[in-house]
Length: 303
Image (cartoon, rainbow, N blue to C red; front, side, top):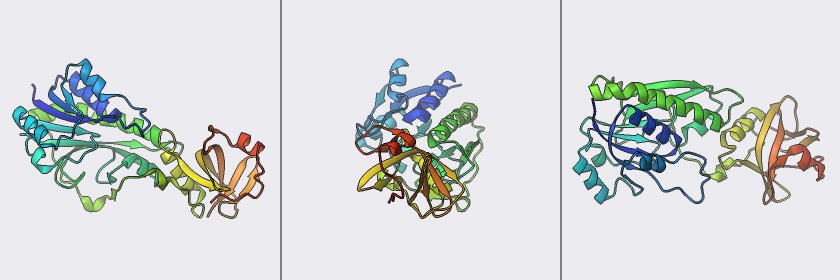
């Protein structure tokens, strides 16, 4: 059994979900994806390259452009599927899918609707998240749920670790949902928006460390935006320092004040933060021990 499909996809979730559709023999007529940004670290697989290998026609221009809307209209797809596509798809485009337009979101909806859900879940200290396949409506991440899969967030996980778990969960959800969608037997469970939350996007500047917060909260920020993301940062002596790796410790100290250099311990609003690896602006990433060995950090103040 087959169905005409138009896919919008990017990033590893897009790559893996597209792979799964191909494995199941989906009739993919057209793919919309994105040009890679020169200002972004590209650590994920290329959806374009996957499309090329399988002879799938693709475009990197916005699906909402009038000429692209007409292309989709001409295909008359039964399904429009979005996997980590970064553009909001307008309602008039969604309506072109005869049997529905669906999105794969990187959280266990209705929690963490909106942008960068994995990073937010880690930053907020959540112990689980997931992947959800839902119908698209005019509001983001608000349509009926078809299927979802939970994944655990361990206290040692970075956002990158969790993103890999979510990617696996996304492929699992698509794998078991696609046959049901084609057969017309997939469930539709209304989303209870009141039971969840919405999060906006994040900018590199949002990584500024607030030392008045607890050591655990600061640790969660650091692991939520560490490699391959821009990182959490602080300043010392007018210079920016990115903290790539840290660990919360018991103890007390003035927020932002260095209380020890071996190991490098910094006071917070509650507890101490052991800085493990960092990077001075314009220099290479290094261990905190090596950094401290070349500088006088006794009682230094991070701001």
